[in-house]
Length: 276
Ligand SMILES: Nc1ncnc2c1ncn2[C@@H]1O[C@H](COP(=O)(O)OP(=O)(O)OP(=O)(O)O)[C@@H](O)[C@H]1O
Ligand SMILES: [Mg+2]
Image (cartoon, rainbow, N blue to C red; front, side):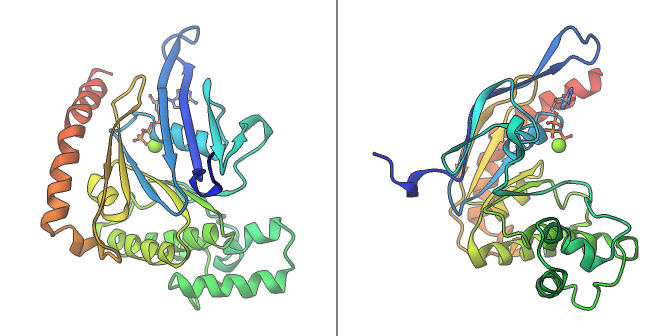
C-alpha cells in the first residue's frame, strides 16, 4: 500500500514528445523519448542538459502547457491532462520576463491574486509583504522598464510565490543575469524555499547552479530522443551560500562526477549545432 507521503508532487512517466520536423512537416522530430522523472514533496530537483535538448519541453509538459505524444503526468497522484487545463498546483517562472510592462511593480505582483478575485486592498497588502520579502520595498510604483534585470527577476519571483504554489517550475530563470546578481538571486530563492519547502523543478544548463541549489540533479542526454541519463543526490549541508559552497571539496567532487556524465552529451549537442 502506498501512503500519501510517498506520492510524489510531480511524476512524469515515460514521456515522449514529437514535433513536426523543421525541414519536412510530414516527418516527426522526437525531442524527448521515454523520459521518467519524479519530484518528491519538498524536494528541489534540477534538470541539466545541453542546449536544445528538450528541457523546456519537459517543463511545459509538467506545467500542462504541452500534451506529450505519449506518457503520463501526475500531480500529487492526480493525472494531469493538458487538454483539461494547466497544472493549477504549479507556479511557472520563465527564462524571459513574464512581467506586464503596463503594470507597476505592485500591480504585477498582485496580478494572479486579482485574477483569482481577491479584493484589491487585501491583494495589495499581501503584495507589499512580498515586495518586502524580495527586497523591493518602496519600489512598488515603478514600472518594469524602470527596474534593473535583477529587480525584475525579484518581481517575477514575488509574482510567482504570492500564489503559494505547491510546485515551482523554473526554466533557467536567472540565466540572463550577471554572475554576482545571479548568485544573490540564487541565495534569495534558497532562503524563500527554506521557509516552506515547496517542490521545485529547476531547469538550467549550468551544472554549478544545479548543484548549488538542489537536493538532486538529473542529467539529460543530447537530443533527439532526449531522456535522463544520470541522477545524482546532492548531500551538501543546508542552509547553503551558493558562492561559498562552490569552493568546498565535496562540491568539486560532485561537479567532477556529474560533468563526467554530461560532457559527452554537451559535445554531441555542440557538434549538432555546428552542423545546422
Ligand atoms: N513547438 C515545437 N515545434 C517544433 N519543434 C519544437 C517545438 N518545441 C521544441 N521543439 C524542438 O525540440 C527540441 C527541444 O527544445 P527545447 O526548447 O525543449 O530545448 P531546451 O533544452 O529547452 O533548449 P535551450 O537550452 O536552448 O533552452 C529542439 O530541437 C526544438 O527545436
Ligand atoms: Mg529552454
